[in-house]
Image (cartoon, rainbow, N blue to C red):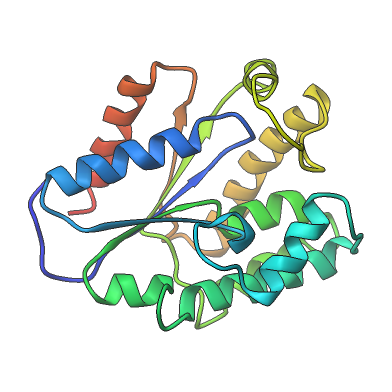
Amino acid sequence: MKKTNGRGRLIVFEGIDGCGKTTQLALLKARLEADGRRAFVTSEPTCKADHVPTPAGRLIGEALRGKTVYSDSALAALFLADRIAHNTDPALGIRRFLDGGTDVICARYYYSTAVYQGGEKNLDWILRAHLDCPDVVRPDLCVFLDLSPEESLARIGKRNGEREIYERGAEMLAAAREKYLAVFERIRALDPAQNIRVLSAAEPADVLAGRIYDEVARLS
């Protein structure tokens, strides 16, 4: 992959918990930098990023820990507000890095919001709110790390610390996986330019990293 002096690329990783997003983000960043590109890793919501969360991001963090309760639509609105701020922040915003020629690698984006807050009544509203928002950048590539609920639970079980409200068993993880696939189909219908690739997260990390790198190389 050759070094370029143009706009950076936004590469998003999605998947159910335990699929290896953190590992693959780090491996891709290292590979891109070895190619002479600049890369910046971030996460959504911003309460999970390495920088200070937005006001909406702080509220989302409380909700994910079960400390506050919102309706799905209200929480989706908070995610949208957090995402807009994440895109437009003058110091650490996604747009700033992209415009400066830096690749941005982000764990979760609006696909997650559609999966976890989207339902029969508000899914299209959530998708349209993001697709029609001029401040929300469309990813150049979305990589879905596909993993079985059983393997996901096994990996989650090895973690220490407090779990989030969405980490509650195989049934919920299976439902999230199926919802992701349905959301991808729906979002492609609304926006055919969406570039979404589904890769098996059950493969060894180095093999999966190679497949991801090949997908990114096709963007050059």
